[in-house]
Image (cartoon, rainbow, N blue to C red; front, side, top):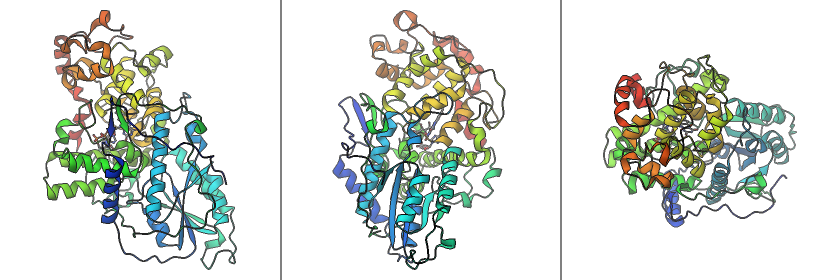
Length: 541
Ligand SMILES: Cc1cc2nc3c(=O)[nH]c(=O)nc-3n(C[C@H](O)[C@H](O)[C@H](O)COP(=O)(O)OP(=O)(O)OC[C@H]3O[C@@H](n4cnc5c(N)ncnc54)[C@H](O)[C@@H]3O)c2cc1C
């Protein structure tokens, strides 16, 4: 089997100047996950025979995992498998950036270590194999006489291509009736069965076909309950070597310490702890709508996205927790707004079903024509946080240091790259793909096409004025001074507008307005009524 040599366990310690998200220590986190598992336990009896594989992809969780549930229900033994696919650690499609940066790789390893731990709590384990799923799964299916491989359905081209190759690989596997231990394997070929599990709304429950998705976000259908699992899913099949998790070095990456800002802990245990911390312990859900446009610190927004993207957290679980909070504490526009943001997440996923590969094309779903530049120097100034605009530079430094950036920050740096610099939006999207802990092809490319005017958004011009954004969202320059300490010595109101003498020269002039003062921007801000950016999208409901 293609296993890795034993390496040091993934570490997640945070230094004094970082915020650990969640803040809980390991014992507290274990208590939270055990409680959640207990609440989602059922006494259903399994009805199947033989062995089934669960092929874990972006669903690195036990709670509300339908593939795991079905594999357990329709078999006598379940073999959970994760394939460390080398393609994930290659380079991005157009511009050759690392496909997975060190911080997300580290987060992924933490997710896998935690998944193994939680599967063991349920009487199973996780087989970690190095290689392509289309090579590994058929050979495991043959060796373990598997009747079905269960997996979560994906929607974007790279993942769909792997699915096609796995199906083809399984078609080469023939399990004779004598080998199949009494299980009916149709045509003697193990089958690949998909479940839908990435979104809060189930694809099959939409009141329209996903290919007819309207260009508006609506909350029009009911949300399914989380799946309950029995207390034990064991026993697992006999496996000689369950495989070690690779080190970053074995993946061809150098480890990167988070020296300041948010240090996220990967895995389902941390995800459930963050939900507990944000909703129940700190009671922040009730103010989410007022704080969600912040940029500094761990608590202005939920910070659920890295766990949602890796599938360590189920959006349906968040929905159920919001409803529980509304019943037990209060319901207000903030409790609703978290769900509404999750509808946006769903929306971008369904959009990928509707628009397919055009989400990744220069002209986007709209097939828009623009004269984009690919100026390397300008792009590098943006990427490295050296544009001379503190708000841009601070956000880009946060991204490369932590793998995270606020939603506000993402909209601002996206607008700056495409509107002020005129750079090909795909360079920005691919750099985000490298760096983001929460990278998700649908949300990332969906938001980039949206922000650069090539998406399905009826409004073409989403320009974010930096002076106006700085004035509104960082009036005291706290955020920029946190990431650019050289600004701490100047008066608060000047930190976002330090002038070239105190800061570095600006690489491009702003397309509209100037960054040198508030007053000039006022008329400009008033003229461009869309300056609050995506907030106006709510009008489209
Ligand atoms: C250019 C750009 C690129 C982005 N790339 C990604 C990406 O790769 N992965 C990703 O998960 N999000 C992406 N987003 C959306 C958004 O910025 C993040 O989801 C959000 O900042 C995560 O922080 P949070 O969990 O605290 O969000 P919260 O404000 O607490 O929102 C709760 C959840 O709602 C969802 N959500 C909120 N806003 C959006 C949105 N605009 N689009 C889709 N889902 C949303 C997320 O799952 C988020 O975790 C991008 C936004 C922009 C403008």
